[in-house]
Image 1 (cartoon, rainbow, N blue to C red):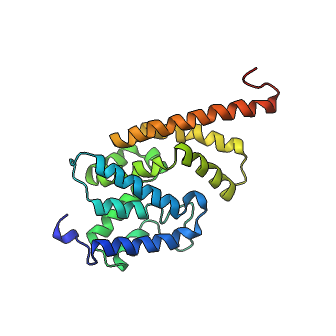
Image 2: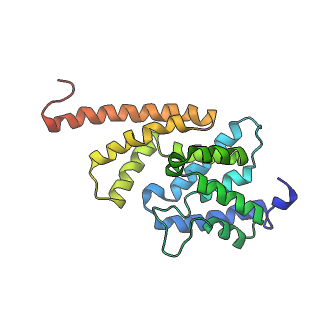
Image 3: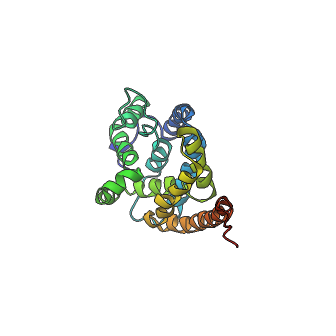
Amino acid sequence: MTSTEQPVQGEGNLVESVTEYVKSYMANYDGSHDFNHIQRVVGLAKHIHAHLPEDPPRDGQVVVLSALLHDVGDKKYLKPGEDASTLVYELLLSLGAAEQLAKTVQTICLGVSYSSEIKDPARVQDLIKSHPELAVVQDADRLDAIGSIGIGRVFTFTGARTTRSMDDSIQHFHDKLLKLESMMKTDVGRTLARTKTERMQEFLKWWDEEAAFSTGLPSSA
């Protein structure tokens, strides 16, 4: 990181300040997107970052800050008057970060979204070339959406935010979650995603076996 990118506030102090902000901010979210989710994503991002080759070079501070802030301004929870395109940038400046660092983290946070990648995958690939930290944070966030914790998060979100049935939740696995393994950007992410996807597939087999009783035709018959 060049001297112009160094935050005015020390790295440790900035991460600590951002952590406290995010802990308070996420308290307004439901259990599927709470601070526990953030902590897991940060941990996964650190793991991926630490186990990837050094090339292309990545900034560990950018990885951590982006992981901490990736859900701040999420459109599902955006408050009236908040601007998702500048919320992270303005927060970091207010906490003493250098402008370039704030811009970089804001750009990465806006690039994490699954829906935005589906709409324009080429744009995400271009962003990763400019900001390789995005691949790390994006994989970390998606890894927390799958596996056993992902299963819990699906039903938590459905119960907290919608009136949909459990069958609708199951459809979400097929519409999105089972596809995430193929969208991983790093080798570390792909390895972790394989195991987590297998766990979801096993769960769905159990679900189908038990749900079959509602039709009077158990799948084992």
